[in-house]
Amino acid sequence: MSVLTILDSVPTRLFIGGQWVQASDSATFPVVNPATGKVIAEVADATAADGEAALTAAANAQKAWAATSPRERANILAKAFDLVIEHRDELAAIITAEMGKPFAESVAEVNYGAEFLRWFAEETTHFAGRYSVAPDGRNRLMVHHRPVGPSLLITPWNFPLAMATRKVAPALAAGCTSVLKPAALTPLTALRFAELLQDAGVPAGVVNVVPTTQPGELTGPLLRDERLRKVSFTGSTAVGRAIIRDSAEQVLRVSMELGGNAPFLVFEDADLDAAIEGAMVAKLRNGGEACVAANRFLIHESIAEQFTSRLVKRMNEVTMGDGAQPETQLGPLIDEKSRTKVHSLVESAVLAGATLRTGGEILPGEGYFYPATVLTDIPAGAQILREEIFGPVAPITTFRSEEEAVSLANNSEYGLVCFAYTKDLNRTLRLAESLETGMLGINTGVVSNPAAPFGGVKQSGLGREGGAEGILEYLETVYVGISDPNER
Ligand code: SIN
Image (cartoon, rainbow, N blue to C red; front, side):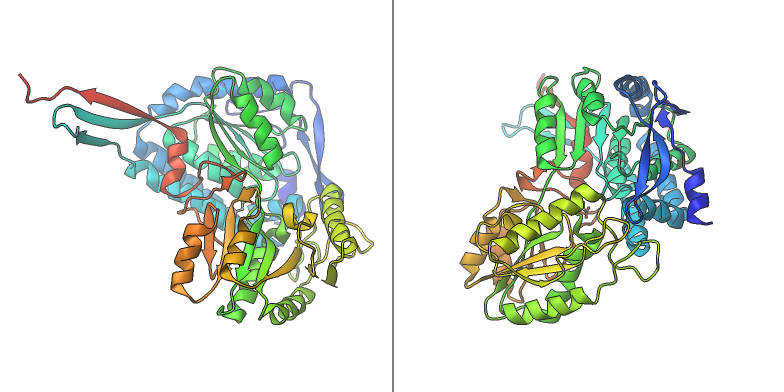
């Protein structure tokens, strides 16, 4: 099937209460392919009234969905996993067309995203409460869990499928209904995913999808609506803060996956071949448009020049182009605004004295391309070391001791992920205890795994997605105190 045929058949209306409907004011918005700047679809633009209709559908479906058996929910999730895998190439083509990443990476995203469905299908039936004897030997303590209730799931554009499955799957597993608001830049994948969920047997109203170009107008009233019980958001720290503020009114359960500023540490004892491979993945996966992308390369001064020249060579070999072309290894950035931001971070670092070792130049032509870029000699405190770059730019700085490396790594308001290359087990354990981070990759450039708790500390967020922890975000804990059965 050609990409055009695939795009022609993707649903473009809102998905509310099991029906595909137009926006209440019939408005639509264009979806653009970032590799060409051309419009590939017109999608219904949900209004605040549509958001409310979606929440009504979710609230009406909540009781029946919560009453389904764990096995029933597990079977539906397992079927959804099968369908996503069956439609892998089609979903990958949609992801590449609307988000720009190379097709092979889109396929990897579909595999990654599908695994959340499988993981939570398994978690559904294995989840248990507990029964214990109180320490004084008298009362009995029973703990069980109930679904939190209707949830608002707000997903970003960088992983249009995986970020949706990472939220929808645990919500479904826990017995929660939801309103999914995908990013307006990449709504098509979420709409096609909703169709597959319907085919998998998810009942009407249990998952509703409302793309919109007016996110605040749609989500604001929902966050203040007493029928909503939870919000899960992946995106920038600035928007996350605003959502946390709005959530205070109804004291909502909140999960936040926010910004990152990942340090990538290479110690003097590291396997340099492995460190270079890891650096390429940690920097160029998703074109650097990931909150877990390596943002600051901190290299021991004794190997810094060797590391830098090898990284520059590898970055120079990267083929940039339309993600739909098989040879492409680096796609475009998502839009002009992002490209301008990335370029201005590079320009301001160079103005402050940094050396451009490769890249750093916007070439003429269609699409929002930005080349793989390496910077060295960056002055301490430069903006590029403080901000999330979200692009294929590797700023390299050096350290002299482990203590200095840890202090530099921790010198950030963020604490999502750190990467470290070392062969020293004791150092690894010291890093695990001293780095202020929610996730730590040792001798690897990727930590994301549906079976592990993804999330950050400090201003990188609240809560965890995936792993055994993921389902707890959608469950209330209920404790029942029972009098001693042996008394009287
Ligand atoms: C993100 O960038 O928000 C998620 C990346 C991942 O799951 O690996």
